[in-house]
Length: 123
Image (cartoon, rainbow, N blue to C red; front, side, top):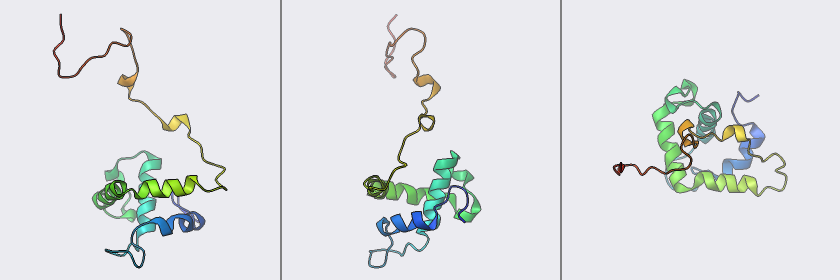
């Protein structure tokens, strides 16, 4: 049984072939890819900071660095595109509770007046 926020074996089999570090790929072997993906899911689903990553996932700085390298290389987009194109994907949805704006992003008193940062205000 998978722990909270972790991939089940079925979910892992669906994406493991899309990730770097397979036999035949250049560079180091990605034998800990599942642990790393579970670490990323833990951070994203829990909403915690990287430095709060549980020790079972390894060093948080290493995980964050690898996460950003994969993001720059387009690995996450490739995985999501594969999951979206799945005809059996009946559970894809975006819940508005996941999308939050900063409190200052809302237009408050004064309407929609735009303030240019770094430009002095005219009296």
